[in-house]
Image 1 (cartoon, one colour):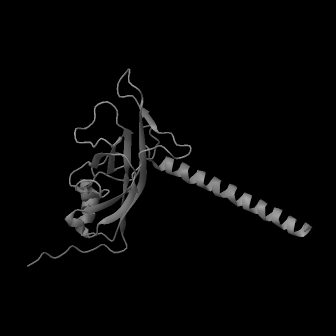
Image 2 (cartoon, one colour; image 1 turned 90 degrees about the horizontal axis):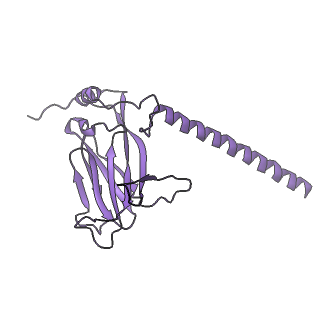
Image 3 (cartoon, helix red, strand yellow; image 1 turned 120 degrees about the horizontal axis):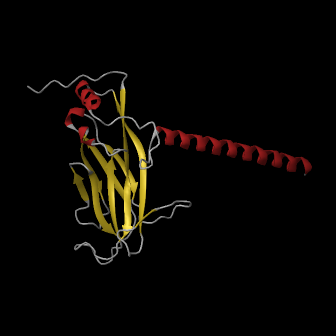
Length: 217
């Protein structure tokens, strides 16, 4: 007889924060032995906790679907860290599928990340690192996004696992080495609010100007 599935907890939602994205840097000096000659960059795609938490408590595996020009483009990572390192010369969309542990009885999460190799965003300051003294600085580009996985009405067994795991909410204080926190999140919200108010003001000024032009015409 098949085991009876655990009951789902009605009206309850549990969220877990993650970050996903990629780092990339131009290859200099010694190249990986299998890197094609036309490849210019080494990059790493990843899914991880904002503070390096072990996500294997609720994630079973992460599948990265690369561009079809790569050998075996569908790569499955079944142990943490959920990351994949490759070389390449161009940017493309990477399909990411997160499969949850069996106890979760949840559908996989499917989304995309645009692989970034170059710091082309206006006003962006890429991280610059020196691998050793005397060498030219190596520019490392990082494209990272914060998100939260929300489990609506999780079953009782999975709920216990989530509550017993260490990954939790974002830290309350700003930490220099930590790119995400509640304080930083609030600062982003405040900046957006200021921007919205400024835009609303500009729209009103344009409306007034247009009204004056129509009246004078």
